[in-house]
Image (cartoon, rainbow, N blue to C red; front, side, top):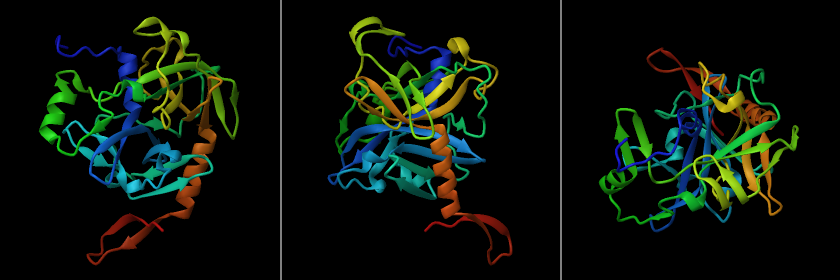
Length: 282
């Protein structure tokens, strides 16, 4: 890295934050406002983007949800997808990307469930706090080239974003069942990995939709990402009493199963008599 860009992240955290993406809402004027976090998962060879359904409150349309790319453009989440479903009661949106993965990103493998080798009594929650977003609102007049030059950094080690900084909370598990997974984050007198002791830690606002995951003991990279990170759920709320609330992996998998049952893969025959897979959405 050059002196122009100091990326405070070790190899372990560089991989952990690639499972999440910042989300932006495009308003009626064409401006983009930072919203929340999306999580990337893979289940039975299909790729999905998950985020909190309350992001769509206040008449916000799914079509307006975007993420920021290394090309300096905002990309519609809808353009990655072949369908989506909103589970308002569980506060989860499932976006089906079928066989399309976002380049240079990581995906939690939901087919892996064993916790052997993982810290079982704690979880990490990674997302993008509003307080650490370098642009909370982007005016429609900002060009792609301007945004790319200012917020995208590329060198021989990879691509890095300066538009939003990720944050990871480590918490002991309070509850973990078929309904919720909960923990605790005390902001006062917090000890942060890269900043050390601080009087007040970042507020998790904006981290909703971010990934909760079990981590390998000692938080070190193992031979594979599957052996290092194991999906635990989606964080959706931070309460006034410092409680973190999430939707657990058991429920997420059940919702994906419901989604796929309602929208099954079907074999169709096109006019050229080639067999192809097509996702039928209602």
